[in-house]
Length: 335
Ligand code: SAM
Ligand code: SF4
Image (cartoon, rainbow, N blue to C red; front, side, top):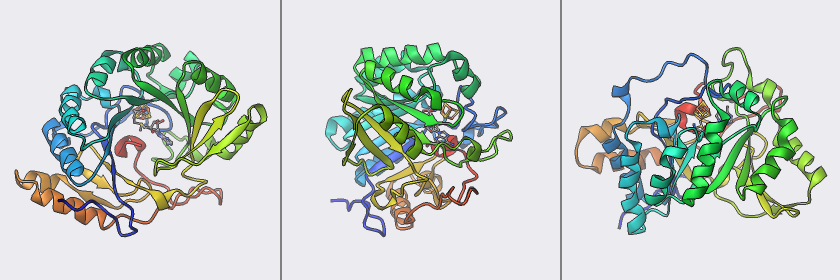
């Protein structure tokens, strides 16, 4: 038996978030600048390498694999990877294969993703106003995303909407979005804007920061909220809206420290393993991966990296300064 991955703080690592590309067909203002320089294709792990690395993690006890990016569905040939991963679902080694997407291409992939064994997807959507949507994503079209959501639901995929809460942008849509998501029998999670790759095009995350505590209080003025104790080992906390029965999540990395139950690591599309979203510590897995066809070096590099997983992040807005902020963008580590 292969020993599972346990970090120095006795947290088992059972969840890998894998970024398959840094490219995207949107340019969300809080995530990317308008003029992004992307990595040269030769730096990216090939689809076969993504398979090898994912398979090594699954052998070492990873049970949940989330594919992200950039926009994962713009990676050429990505269905080949999803289809290959379905063997791990069939064997029972992997419990869940899932995806975070902007939804723009989902209408083309939803049926195939379901056929590959996917059952749930997270779709990012911050506003239901077409003009605001094209403002915040710069290049996106709301209609395409709605079409993607329709296709996902028709294919049988359970949909969770992820919305970034942005002051002065979608605070007026709190109830509208909540009710729309409930009316379509979807789940909803609000994400607090994080100081990643700050000062993009002169915008600062601090100016857009809408503490989810405020958002929650505003929701509580209209609905009866019951705290749910369930935890995914991640930063999300959940409430149930009694009037609709809907579950709403809040991801508040800046106001709630969730690190003690952290079960996840993130791999970039170039094979850098980040042991914490909020720290620069990382390990290069591409070198051991390419050094031999055997996976022994790779597995040892993974174990070595997990031995260095930090206790937690240092994000802190409380002093009205962005302490502990990261210079890299979410599209780099995949959110
Ligand atoms: N392109 C896909 C998407 O948009 O869902 C997957 C990658 S995206 C980086 C993953 C998530 O990160 C999205 O829900 C996005 O809204 C969120 N995100 C990006 N930049 C963020 C920031 N500065 N703070 C909080 N969330 C952010
Ligand atoms: Fe692309 Fe997702 Fe970043 Fe928006 S949040 S620019 S869709 S990677």
